[in-house]
Length: 443
Ligand code: PHE
Image (tube, rainbow, N blue to C red; front, side, top):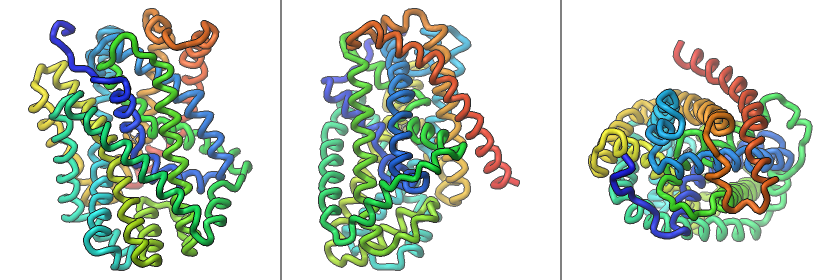
């Protein structure tokens, strides 16, 4: 399979921005602020940072190592590096990609619709009614289809001319938008109350048994780990890329955007006295309470709303690209389809799988729980065990960039012992929650 010439990134920056693009998305701007507020403020942020850097970055490095060693997409890569049985993990990754993109695209469709609404007429209707109207039904189906079409058209363009080019434009735009919003929010009267709510410390909440799994789950989702996205992006890298430095850069950027998003959301919500709404962190909280604040601000609110939802849309798009690329590159490598057909075929199937999510919010929630919460940690757990205990010379693949052999050994022991133990706890917690939701939703 290696014989065919494989596509690759044009520049180092292109790879980094594409990987940051994969990481930064709805998870940062929509999920992170709410989880933090819900789970203990600054204390949770600290726990989250520990999860990102102590478990997330090492797992990312493991994915990078496998992807670059094999220079193939997940199924072929895991088969090459680990033998035929491990190809099963690759299939799990591809299945997870299908499921995540199916519902992710529906939510991304909402962000498109909100962006257009701000642009064309401003938020006028009652936000909760508008959300109900937007989130499910024909409108949701339509925007979901349009969003998938945009994603497909970029992935069809290929690694360098599609994904990299889009990331080089979109990511700087996203950084500017979110930084601009955070600065603007700092000058809102009443922003202080928002900051203190966001960052108040409530260590007691950290003791709750599922907070650890919430932090870990959020870290994996936000860093795009556990389903082969980072593995696939690394398969397009050259041998001399410094993998540890790349992983660290990506994690810092991903955390930075998540943190900034909180610095936007909470001042806005508090400045408009909508804090009581935060408790109900249902799917739609962000899509209801923020527009309410934007309406309260008049013309300025319309502009800010436009910028905010446009940033969400951009983040969602670059993440969706990476999800579709996992599936597409697997079809190219394993079934020898050309890129155009692979991306289009996969995209159409995902579009269909997403339809129930666009028609029913409970089903959307179920997809999120099964794929976004549970399968990702299972995928990361299995990869850690493989790279830690079975892969031949994992250190050789990631050595470049480590200042000392000690750090390198530290990485290996995290992948061998620390990450699997933490992930086992998380799998247990999430497994139970997933089973519960499955039962209550389906029966
Ligand atoms: N990391 C993305 C986000 O935070 C979601 C994602 C998960 C993308 C898994 C790819 C793979 O929105």
